Length: 297
Image (cartoon, rainbow, N blue to C red):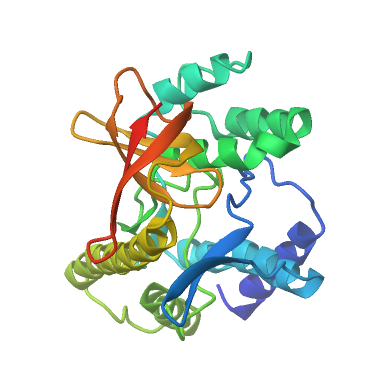
């Protein structure tokens, strides 16, 4: 295997860029058209910058290039492992089946990415104004991706939402360490050089990269929650429309439709599940700790 294989794979990327929908590639929409900003100690909302045609093309390129990078690794012989971005079959698929049934739709009993894509496509056409909220619910039920080591001759877990087996992060080595690892592996594969990492090192790196991503996300969520608490501090007792984003025995989380903020439902949590819509009242905020508490109306 040599550079010709990578060139052929990259040509597939540009063919994919001309397609509007990938079979089984679950199409979601961002929920929030606005973001919370703080200026001079005051919180407010600001419209997010809308992506231009070039930004959308770059985004599609970032999505499809990893397929081309993953395949040379697999074709390089049986000596090269790879660091994959995987999203395993959703553990809460049963709830997704119920969620679809509540909208007079049907999903198979076993996780099926192609069926989920069909469901999302139909709902987007039937109720485009509600599709962002639906996307948020589905994303919460699908779960988060992780980095995992794919060993030679191993069965890759694949990425459920993209409905692919071969997927790896590779296009941003300047800001994402897993991409740098992938490019080092690919460089060694193309050159026929020895593996630049041991299997043990790659196993540890996969876990480390996932842990660091989770830690960064936690900090980002904390900052966003404090900003949201500051935004809502003067709205005590007001009522809002919301959607449930997390439901467990210990806590129930929901997100306001407007302004786009997430908080905990502390009163009236019985019988709720992810995706449910409800009316809530703001009862407490704590900017320092990022706490926002609501009661069901």
